[in-house]
Length: 331
Image 1: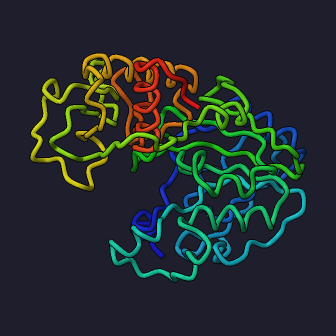
Image 2: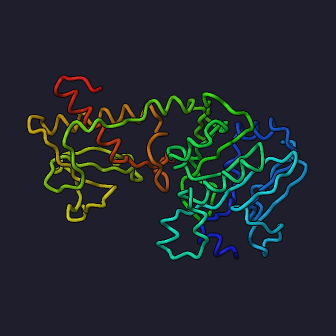
Image 3: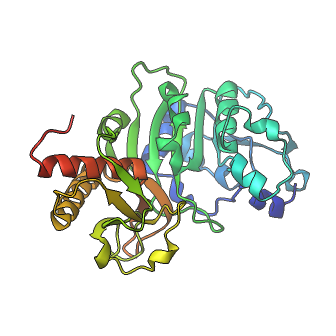
């Protein structure tokens, strides 16, 4: 597999050491491993770790013989190496993308996983006690995250992208050999400690489905821009439909970024509803530090990660706003 095909299959080469935050350096040191081991070595960028971190030797594997590493399909099995910590950027590729792009790949890789990086994590944890992996940031809120949660030591969201060839939002996950019950996962944004994962998990919103709320219905009066754009005046926000400067003919059943919402609540003043929805949204984003919102490619002009509001969470915000306006409790 040549470098061009590796990019096609989601193997992006890390060119910057932006991922190497202080807490990650500390994790590598505390592993007391002397070998940096990358089973998806590529150009070997992640193996350029200073010997100040106790690293004395580097070892790499790759499926591409032109890269001059030992040949190995690490999505099938990763050999164990004593006293080694895996430091890697595994391939990212969903089954849907592989099918849509007609990529020639062994689809048995996807039998129990929705993305190749998930299979890679499983193989890495089978092989080694300590793993540092750069993976898509969507990992944090995926169902797969819970599978190996008791071996996760920390998750670091990278605001600035370490890749030259993609804007895919990523995070760095550190795994150790200590089974933690209950799981205790430290969450960082770059070098800043935010909180434990349990804090963010408890804040996630789940709708009660106690009101008729339909998305992508053009006759509705409530509008939602569900994604941050690059400027501060165009962030995720609820609007009255008449306020939304958007061609409504573009709203389709599959729309996920801008939508019109139909509600069965004629007693609610739409202006009041919009105001209350945006108040709840702002409070939610402030409390969660956006960790529970889906990442979106690229950053805003002031360097913040762009986010997308999924419709499940949006539904819950609307339900809470309606209940607040009607003077009831939301439970």
